[in-house]
View (cartoon, rainbow, N blue to C red):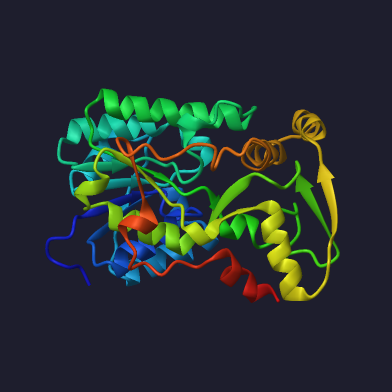
Length: 311
């Protein structure tokens, strides 16, 4: 049920991977929620079921598309906050959302689709990840140039992408015999459960402390190396895994030889697990805040706790 005084939120990309968690968290927090839905999505067998559940939960569905400026402006005029959760292939298209927000003139905050590394701190990344980070940074600069109030969300690694199989491509569960590790497994990485990412994101939308800031979701118990995570898993299953370390040179070669989406996944892995792009910088308090410090009431799921479901 919507709570008086809560910002009205439009989620763009709400049927996508992280979008559905954002919608759920926003509903739980009592925000009036709107979702921009493409006509083609309504007829999609799987996403159609999700849309039906949104409707049943009281979310206002608005037919539109970021390529349809008129429908986008119409939807944006209904709300106070716009959250974009569009996928990697539509990151650059967010300039259309920026233009619509500017024309609508009603939005008090925009959260573009980030939900990963801090795009301004990935100078050693290689393509195709490097291009993705660069485009995300360009979207930031476009938001700032238009004078639109914002919050950027850096949530690092999705637990559902990494912990479900410990980064083993095509595996459906964490390994019990051997594990492939990009690099030496030493750089610290950050892994966060999707529901927790959504909870922190929604808490930030009306918080003056996150206005025109980057919110970094870095729960202390979830900052650990690949080797640390493997050690946790080995303790849980009572077995030592064979560890196969892939040197950077070999990873770079594999990236060049692979096609999408494998090359994208590997290049992001290179950035995170070899170059340490999750943790190689300290938060600058003039531009950023840390989520678990701002919202200690959020009981986040630790890496250790998350792995228990696979024992």
